[in-house]
Image (cartoon, rainbow, N blue to C red; front, top):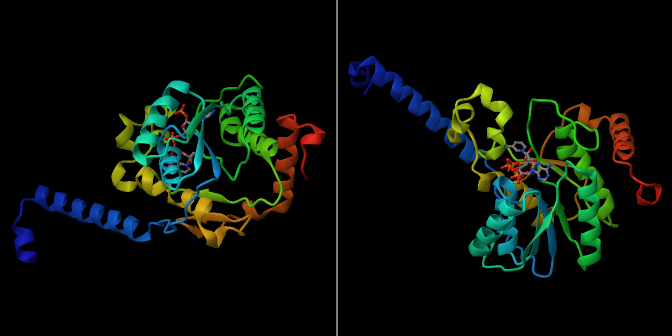
Length: 269
Ligand SMILES: NC(=O)c1ccc[n+]([C@@H]2O[C@H](COP(=O)([O-])OP(=O)(O)OC[C@H]3O[C@@H](n4cnc5c(N)ncnc54)[C@H](OP(=O)(O)O)[C@@H]3O)[C@@H](O)[C@H]2O)c1
């Protein structure tokens, strides 16, 4: 076998080596992949998913709709949301999928969204703060906050506080490296010729694979009473030292309350 390999032209040898390495890496990803095994139905439950028109959010919406949930797609672009809604209904067979406009980079939009939900929905069982963006350029939102921080953190912070009820569990997760639109933001294109050249699908999970931990946390009975944990691949994962710094967490909470202008009567802690 070795003699045969050595007799091949050098370019073939290199090509073969690269194929074996990539195949091995993909096999490792597949082997370590966390998969939600719960068959739980969500009939009668209501779920909100932010950023549900694409990527991990859309795959999560399809799965939860298949389980019978009422799924609210909280999206900033109504046109993209309408296309996604059709796909989700077609793939899940569940027509109880609705769109509500939400731009997390606008505190006004977050407040309007929350007020609409509180007025129109009879219940809310699961809130999935999924939307997010990655950008290098520094821009400010209409609220004077840094765009990425507001889209990823402050917007969700306000939303969660406005929708909070009692007796909830809260967990965070990392989906893994997932091949979605977040990897092709315009500000990153300076480093890449196209969406695939920076982090190709070979090195990434698919959106469906990336959605597994989110789905697991939304449905699995074994995590129903788990709170304050960090998950990866459907398992509790180690956090950094910074994430365990209670003083820093308190400071972030207080600064966030101030920056999103949370009113005293809206504060639950
Ligand atoms: N993909 C990864 O490798 C990876 C790794 C770690 C963490 N994550 C996190 O996983 C989550 C889902 O990401 P993804 O990979 O599925 O990315 P994606 O395909 O780019 O989807 C992101 C979603 O968030 C929405 N969004 C962005 N900014 C928003 C805003 N201001 N208001 C409302 N919606 C907004 C997007 O809406 P538009 O379609 O209108 O832009 C889109 O629906 C994100 O929080 C991301 O940070 C992803």
